[in-house]
Image (cartoon, rainbow, N blue to C red; front, side):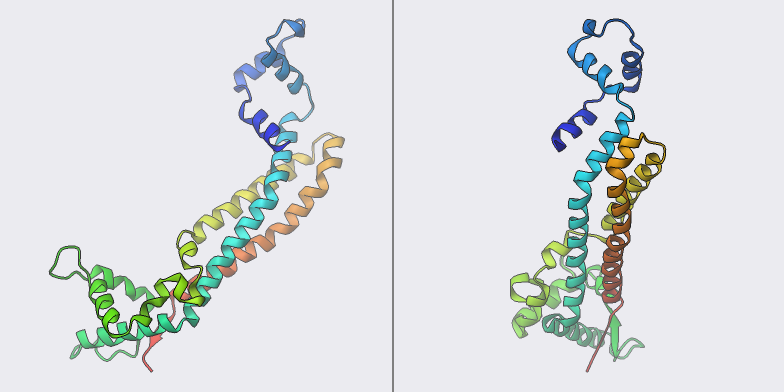
Length: 239
């Protein structure tokens, strides 16, 4: 049924052609099969609204599940960074390295740093082409304590097993999906107010339920956003 409805919407005639078919008043049998079909379809009260509601009914549940699941991945990964002994060891080494490189300056002997400062590992270039401070740090850790790099390997750090999937996601993308879902529900909710009685009777309960569920979906994304922000603002301190 879903494929049939989306097919009708996808193959709908351009507005100008649809108006011509709709205004056609001669014998319907004279029309080609496609135009005849749309002539009958356009005669159905609130045809566009009916198709939009049917498509939303099919897509709302799966969209909700995907958004919630992806938000959970981001949340758990952010929390995993907070718990990961491997990541904490890596940060400790970065702090020691930074203090060594900045010895004698105002930045030397720093008690900690914000995680946003890690970007400097990539920005700081070495004398060799395409080699950064990050390459240097990783090379030393691989020799001295490889366990501090396990956080970067999902199978080696149980706290960050969803890291590869989390790297493919973004809060901005999830917020966009929630906004789009809210807009679709709101649009149909407004249109239902002036829709034929049979359309309201069939779909009003669903739209009300969907509208009620939207705040919970948004809350899942907000939790993920706060977790991500909290992790990025975390400061690593030397014990």
